[in-house]
Length: 291
Image 1 (cartoon, one colour):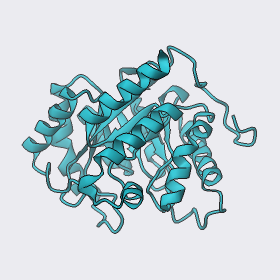
Image 2 (cartoon, rainbow, N blue to C red; image 1 turned 120 degrees about the vertical axis):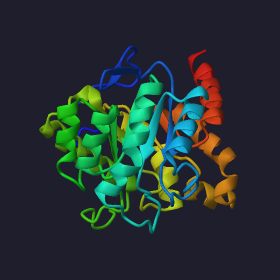
Image 3 (cartoon, one colour; image 1 turned 60 degrees about the vertical axis):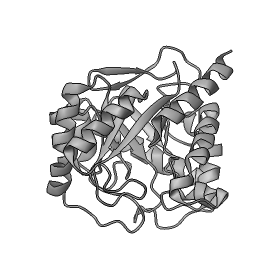
Image 4 (tube, rainbow, N blue to C red; image 1 turned 90 degrees about the vertical axis):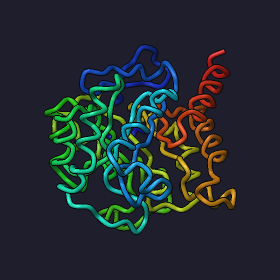
């Protein structure tokens, strides 16, 4: 652990039988590398916008992701791609609540809501979600940590270099992310979120360059040393396109490669579009590591 982080660890790397709690779910965090399937109920997400915008299509795709081996489903109603158009909370909720409510009756894995808005998170939890996935690390809407605490949600907080309060980078993106996430953890704890319901995300691709994204992945052991489970979302992102010179539709191989490296370096959860391929890849990586 970084002696200057100010965060006392709850989970230590390598400790068996530790759980991430989300609602009534217990995720055995060190048993394997878990895969979170992405379900974007949006018209404008960067790689699958509009594909699952209708409720029946969204539900069918979520069931497909579940059958492919997803350990949880992350439902989002607002695109977070660069240059996206912000969506009012009411519209975001209208997109996702029917999907979450239907899925909660169909699947028996945690449902995550990808939102930074407290009102949307609260409605999603009432509809059957059990995880709040906040790309602004509990900074954009100060009430969201309280919603996580009062509902017993698992709370994922991401480092976001687009944060207007971040001002400027120090030149050490890993140190910046650790400092940011340390403050996010402090906010969550102050609101009453239990340590075993906190997960962190280094935020690759959000306001960072290709080299910085690669550095954040290499630094996964540093984030693990903060003492909380770590989620990584490499799926089809711009840094993969930059390295391989491939458009978004041809980034599966790069995504799988990044996922495997992340699993080896200690990522506990991988958030991806291509669940079947990543599940098989990290299952192989886990088998090699545990042999």
